[in-house]
Image 1 (cartoon, rainbow, N blue to C red):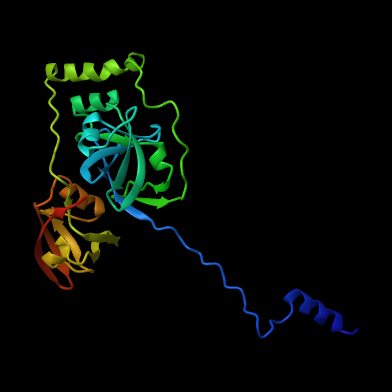
Image 2 (image 1 turned 135 degrees about the vertical axis):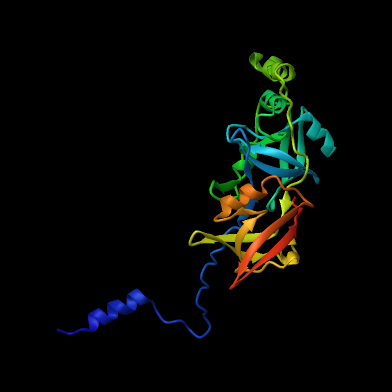
Length: 285
C-alpha cells in the first residue's frame, strides 16, 4: 500500500511552510498580576484587622467585613482626611499596609453603632476606626492563612458596581443605633475602661521560614532594622526576648506588643556559634 496519502495528510495538518517574508506568531505573554503581602492581626473579638491610610493620614485600624457594602469610616476619621463630603460620601486615596493602593476609593462617613459599642467596651483590644466592605474587597482575591501573619491580596481588575441607596442616614436604624450609645453609657458603670494602644506596630524587616520544627531567617530587608542589627539569611532563631522559639507563632507571641522604637533581643544560632542580636524595631505603615 502506498504511503503518500498519509504524508500528504501530515503536511495538511502541519500547515504550509513559512515564506521568507513571513514571521511566526509570537506566543502570548502570560502576565500574572502582582500579589501583595498584607500584615494583619486577629483582634480580641476575632475580627481580621488591617491598617490603612486615607489621603496619607493614619494609620487607622480597619476590619475586613464582607457583609459591609462599602468602605465605611467614623466621622472623626473622615474629618482628619480633610475630604469634602456629599451626602456623607467622599473620595479617598486608600493605602493598605503591605502596598495595596486604591486611588479612587469611595467611602462613607458614618459612626457605626457596632464599632461605637465595641470601642466603648474595649472588646477588640484596639480602637476600631472603620470597615473595608464589598466595594474594596471585591477588587481582590484575598487568601486567608491564619497560621501566617500576612494575607495575600491579588488584584482582579474588577470594578464593583456603585452603591445605590446608601449615604443619607436613617434615623435610629430601626432602634439598633441606640445600642452603641447604651454600651458607651454602661461601660463606665461596669468598671470597663478600654485600654487602646496608640503606639505604631514595630517593623523588623525580616522574612522567616520553618524547617524541621525550627525557625530560620529566610531573608532580611536591605537597610532594615534586622539587617542593621547584623542578622543574616540562614540564621536560626532560638529565643526572642528570652522566650524559646520553635515556629512563627512563637515569635509572634513574643513580639506582639512591641512597637516602633522598642528593642527585640534575639538569640541566634549561626553555624556552630550562638550569638545575641538586638533589633530596634522600625515603624510600619
